[in-house]
Image (tube, one colour):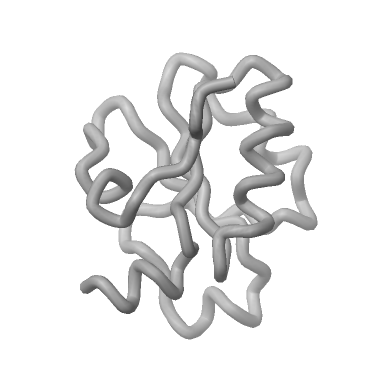
Length: 96
């Protein structure tokens, strides 16, 4: 399988019309901030991810990038074009 990990730069350079950003962190983490255009669908509500359109790229992120890597594997198995942010939201914060 191809590498589905994106750097912060690659993550933020996604085509906004073709990409859906998804923050899978739980509420206690999101309340401290998120990436503006991201949909909030916590990993604990995984079934909601299956309602996303399959004709767009799905860019997933969590706090550190570990859980999002696992979620991407599940989405790939379900036929989605999914990627995750290396280092998660913490890497994003360190970069901006």
